Image 1 (tube, protein in one colour):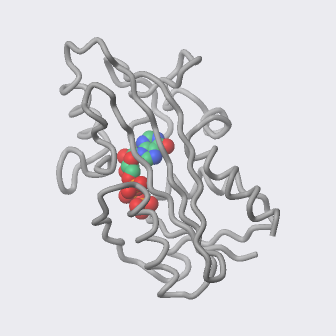
Image 2 (cartoon, protein in one colour):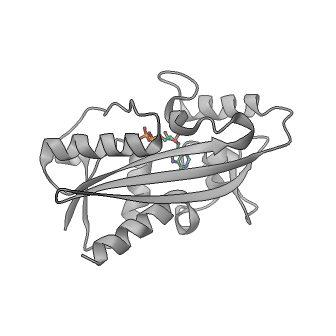
Length: 191
Ligand code: ITT
């Protein structure tokens, strides 16, 4: 079965490719022929995931899905949340975002946070939503070189290492995205 992934994020694509069974032929939106970015004007992860999936469905008319993810930090009232990709401003790097989080949390004892992923699938003409979440804490400093985004500052509960200190395989067993993708896989297998 062919499925287009409505994302320009190559790290997400790599995590998905490692998890999806070979019976699902995953095509990135780049390989499908869309080189641009997709605007994300929504106020929630759910809205943005739907917008991205609908954009690619309108263009190619094939089964497709999008992932919208964010890091929600308790002491920052859920920030960066839906603004995770551009928390430190337009054109910012992962490092800029991490430094901004650490600066905003300086001196705060509550370091609780949660990563959340919403996957929006358009299968045929029907819409399906799958969610994954993982709780953890924010470190005082950046730790680890693997992964992407906020991985160097997030330690999942029950673990000693940040996501960036884990292998792709370790992260992909427990992460927010892995949980949502597993629900997507279970759904597709039941078709
Ligand atoms: P697409 O919209 O093209 O899929 P994006 O990077 O813009 O890619 P999001 O809108 O979902 O993706 O933004 C989520 C941001 O949250 C992302 O840029 C990372 O900074 C961060 N993020 C998402 N998943 C993450 C993960 O598994 N580990 C660390 N940071 C993550």
